[in-house]
Amino acid sequence: NEKLHAFNANSGKEIYSIDDPPPYPSGDAHPGQMAHYATIDMIARQKRMQGYEVLYPRGYDRNGINIEQVVEKKFKKRMREFERGEFLKLCKTEIDKISENVDGVFKRVGLSCDFTNPYATDSPEYRALSQSCFIQLWNKGYIYEDLRPNNYCPGCRTTIAEAEVVYKELPAEMTYMKWKVKETNDAIEIGTTRPELLCACQAVLFNPDDDRYKKLKGKHAVLPLYGREVPILPHGAAKPEFGTGMVMICSYGDTTDIQLFRELKLKPIQAISEENKMTKDAGFLEGMSVKNARKAIIEKMKEEKVLLKQEQTTHRTPTCERSGDALEFISLKEWYVKQLPYLDDLKKIADEMKFYPEKNKQILINWIDAVTIDWPISRRRYYHTEIPLWYCVKCGEPFVPKPGKYYQPWKENPPTGSRCKCGSTEFTGEERVFDTWMDSSISNLYVTGYLRDESLFKKSFPCSMRPQGREIVRTWLFYTMLKSKLLLNSKPFKEVWITGLGMDEHGKKLSKSKGNYTDPMPVIDKYTADAYRFWAASETSVGDDFRLSEERIAGAAKFLTKFWNISKFISSFEYRETGELKSADRWILAELNALIKECRAGYDNYNYFVPSTKVREFIW
Image (cartoon, rainbow, N blue to C red; front, side):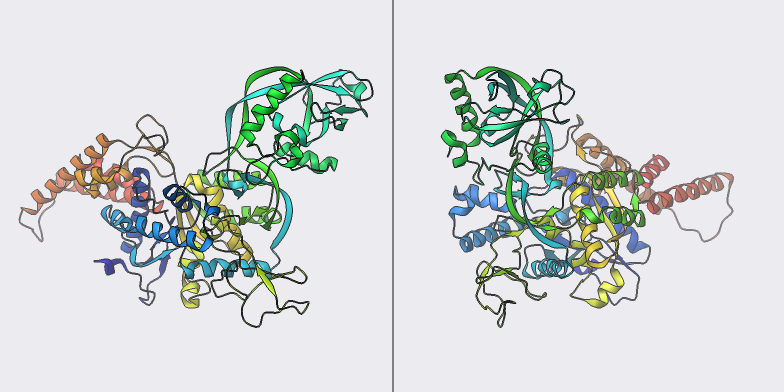
């Protein structure tokens, strides 16, 4: 009965609101995800038993590149080869198909969320709230546009945020080239792992303490193949022990290059386009992919006899969390949310929230300490929430509408009667969209009725509980905290519950691409949802990683069978209202009271490992 757990705002009970992660409806059930949601459900059931009115809606995160890639793969066309409206319809059709059976999966594992009032991040209502929050941030002065180097994913064809970058040690090749010093015609040797960026070099550095190169201070190096001159400068960023001790500074090979271009006031050259092709500034490499350009310039160096040697090495490479592609650093105009001035405030907000387990709070603090740039929120994609802006045709000023409606500026005119400050009534619509985390970071506001149900919002915000995985602390938790700080100057949650990761039997993270897990539904059908849930609770303490094991799920099923048989055996005896307690009775009651005390302590800390294992020990 779906209405059994439906939320009733007028019940008179104290509200306990849960903002759990709205999953992407991939069509496949992930065993770790099912275990995660099963334990979140235990929080909801616990709070109902304690007398709360539990607000626990079922949400789905349907925006973003995942569904875009499904459509691209199915129709064998890139997103921009479609007419935009057609592509959006195809995305909607595909995500609807994928979502058809997802409720059934969650019901099968026993979730008691409110299925009568679901939400989806691609609905007009949700997108309207996301845009309204942006408009509020704009009006408060937290939004700005800037041209600066950004993390750019060639696979996703868009800027990504710092929180979406994953660094990996990947194989690389150090290429050593022969350069010339203009003033002396002496040869110098410089190594790089990005030879295709040679055309974008604007300086050569050596360490001020490196005696080998002190005589070159103030002189100029001549780029091989291109013949252009760049200054030779002393700088601590050059490490005498790395390569030859001399480094070329290009726009942009890494974040160090970005910092040095700013510090040294160098003029950047954009060698790579948004299509991941070399630009006209790359000369003979123009139009080539980055991969092919790297091969071509090596061959050209061999022909011109400026290639000295190549060595295999590894390089700490920034990659995209979603696509896995190596990132480029490309200067693009993007919209940003200010976050750097408020990092200390976010730490104070973290102190106002109770973390389970407490140790996982440090994951958040470590990330706050690691943030170095403001949040770039604009993306060059389609199936996302549109940025609600228009631009005056006459003066170029952005026009921001009033909040409360879902806007699609790429195909709509601004609201009737809109007029720029300059007096013009002609506008062109913004074509970019939000980073999906702009949508995800308002889930707590959406479920508690922000800007939609003032009465509910007053009773249920801050949200009582944010249960989530460790891997999205730096995105979902951080951005939700930032939004609540900037919009409401408030903590978003009273409590935060952070779980570990699901692993296979060998301790490797469960991953579809690795093929180390299978659909959990046959396992649940074989052993029952109760066995799967009991295994999820009893496998590990809250916050720790857990290992998927069918053998241990089978063990949980055996225990529950024994538990059931014991209860049936006890129920076969006649119930007696009174009777004299014997020593064995007093002993077992004392043990039971001790068990109840231990279990309550576990429940108080949302650590279901404690009651599940203690009950098992008591019975078995």
